[in-house]
Length: 293
Image 1 (spheres, helix red, strand yellow):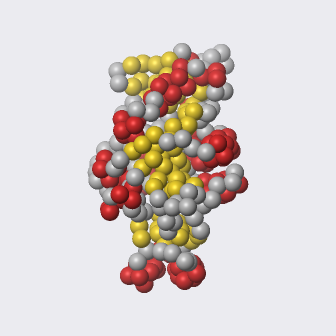
Image 2 (cartoon, rainbow, N blue to C red):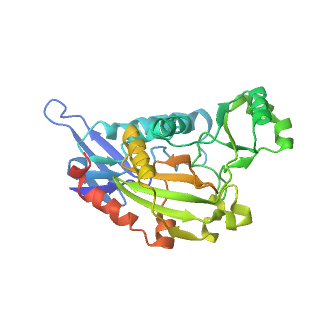
Image 3 (tube, rainbow, N blue to C red):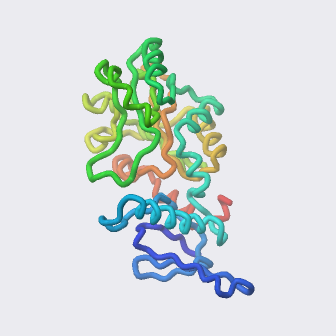
């Protein structure tokens, strides 16, 4: 039984139903390998949004191709008996940032004061009642943006407040800005928790959002209080996740404030910076699926 990493939509998936009454076959062809799904024990699942379509495919044709491809990929979750890291159904639920905030509060985390809305007047009332600045976040992060483009946390300036009518067609997340001592990237594999301090406030451009400048920052391995670790594991269990990359603020008073979790978040840069053995933990989880089922 070997793990399968899905890397590219150029791979091919084939379900053989011609022998439906006696057998059901499925195989995956990727990077020149032909893999019978019956031989797979575990799957490291990163993203189920099809990509890599021809540039000339656009409009309704592209949407049709994306839908058809996504349905075919989704069939993987209903056939075969292998461990998912993470189960795609659990991961889709966990990608909802409003759901994350709700569960974070349920398990005892502090979260920033937040509204999710497409009503400009609601945002203005929120800003007027806030004790600090207000920041904006998107509800999603598209994977098919042009290279170098991404939607990061933004500060809601007076100029942007005056132009809020743009949000009527696309809701957003609005939060009070939380004062920071530093930030944490906490990567979880099963019950193993790897926590790194990010000295984001030492870099002027990274004080609001460190992600565009992650190569310029200093990282340090830190231990979390037992109650924070317990809440993290309760959060993971609520969503049915095995892997998750959490972002926290630690305030100057030492409070831990939950921001979000990426259930398929990147980790290699923090492993290289700190020596945390996250890859080894993932390899252990993929090679011993019975421990996580």
